[in-house]
Image (cartoon, rainbow, N blue to C red; front, side, top):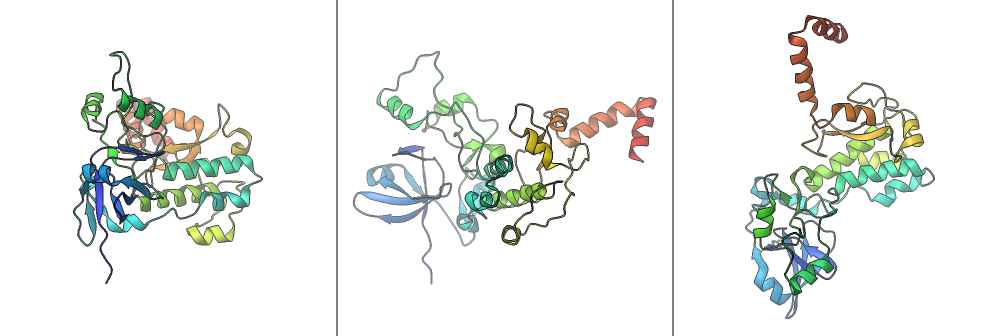
Length: 313
């Protein structure tokens, strides 16, 4: 009979060496002695040694049952236990190795990998050195804005911050000015992150002129390759990797990671490889919002309605 893990969460974000221990992130207790408690945070792939006095002052045991660990900071107030054991479906170096001579294609694969597993960057997040200096002397000018609640590049299963969370809420929380999570649209459980990567890689290898996906990667990720089958959702044209090889990562690159609904962020079935120009045409609107706009415009204009109906035939 296996021993049930004990999960705790810390009341506030803590700096431990070069690591942030994020507030309200579930942590599995690995060991404890007279001076140190070793924990394994849900949002990290490594263990962190916490001084016992910090642990006793800040850690709270989380409730759990056979299926869930309960934590109000996560969607639905709970985390499926199987998510604690889900790891990235493939390592980045293993994914890139067969294409190491194709620099631009590797950049695209790296972008897919990063978007699948890592939250967006945030230049306003305070670093640990600045944070410790603030703790030693917590005085700032009224004109100075210190810190931000959003981490700079962190795991996508770090606690999501609600969109209505305001600066005054951040300044009132126990962690201030340390970061406390990621944007809600960046959040995804580990299992969804793996699905997002597989979807993006399937699209990439199904673009016209894409390199051949090695059999070992196809089998490991269960990628179905149908050459020349991936189309830009906005214009319907087959995506061509040659355009990537010419322009990707230039100021006006022609291949982009597009979102059917930008407000949802990089979620399963919401992101695809499309044209940069098409992404600009869509703007910050969802596909359905754009459809409704066109329908409304055509409804009372007979000329536009005729054009639209002819296009749909």
